[in-house]
Length: 122
Length: 109
Image (cartoon, rainbow over all chains, first blue to last red; front, side, top):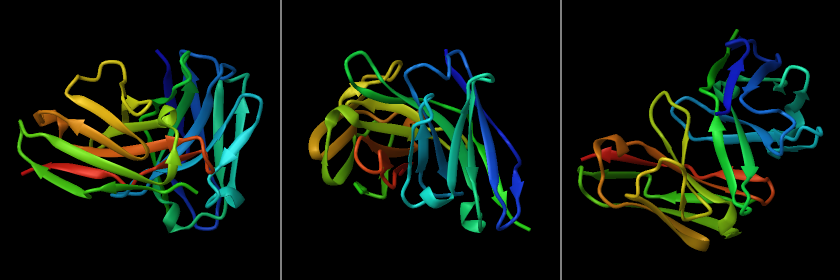
């Protein structure tokens, strides 16, 4: 059973860079899956940030694209998120998750980390 | 960008009642890449339905999904106490690749 675990600072200063890592266990980061980040501001809905494939190919949410960088570390079986120039509006629970196509071609966004709260404040 | 609009925002029902949640897309979405999630406070979302109508592993058969094109529905046939939560629809495939609806809260009446 795959498990995802987010880690990183819980407090980031305004104008700084938010950095998170998602450790993958139970599967290889090089498997045929897209590795995603999703965030949820307190009391609000879900916002997809972007995804990365083990090859390094990425897709980002256009609303965040100019500030987002994702990377894969195959040696550590993990992937990461960097979000620059943060403001209070970036305060949220950040989830890592994975999406894949099953043998019938259906897309499943099935496995999620438990989430980590990142607060942007001075 | 495909926008998913969920309605109603809040649904107030009693245990045992039927819940019908709607998700409308701003343009046609592939059913193959359409899903529903349940989220309880303090927890990550849980996949309920994928492919618009296929139940994920371990999901009770009181949950069912239907629809195609721009209109999709999640039905909970008889609400159990553990079903009171927030539900999100999601599509994958069009720019941006993945979007979520704004959510429907199912609360106890």
